[in-house]
Length: 183
Ligand code: HEC
Image (cartoon, rainbow, N blue to C red; front, top):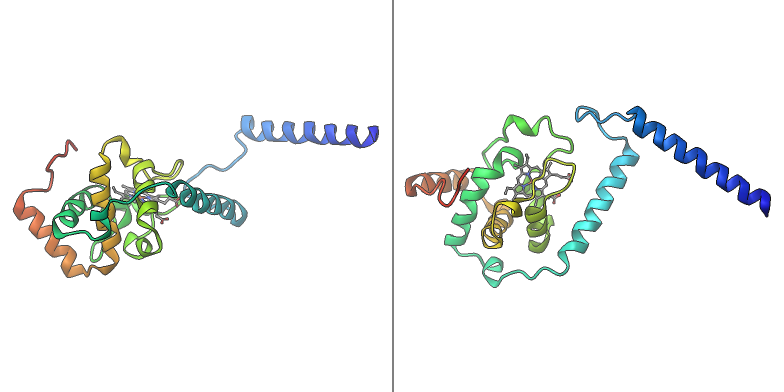
């Protein structure tokens, strides 16, 4: 019994020393240009998937977001086109150069959004995902603005490139591009 205990203590001390060696020695490749190993990727994405699902559980989706009207979609579009398209692209719109260098890569929301509930889209948009490039937009935008963005994001998979371009033109004509925006 005592022998087992001593062995366990020695193992814990050795593992702690090894971990501290990695941390203080900087012996882990933190480059964004290096891909994570399959095991690390699995651990991170599984944690993210389950965390987002759990966090989204208590969120109540406003009725207007379930059945968005054109005005809400237009409001969401202006924000999306301004703040999200460089990383997440859109029908007929390539992402900016920033996407190529990001690790993990931002998903194309025109494909991904249909797999996410409105509450999940809202939670991620508001709180972001730490240690990825995904910002917490709740720092600079009200819940009301973010729900408009979420309504638009959910609508993205149904939009053609022509429809996206038409919304851009409409927004430009209305001079709404930077309405209510300090950036
Ligand atoms: C600087 C780049 C960047 C910008 C700008 C950005 N995002 Fe992201 N976003 C990311 C990255 C990177 C991820 C993937 C994080 C991961 O893999 O864990 C992500 C993930 C997401 C997801 C989760 C996708 C999923 O189902 O896995 C949503 C939803 C999202 N972003 C919404 C938005 C919205 C809405 C905006 C604009 C208001 C926005 N993002 C702007 C980088 C960005």
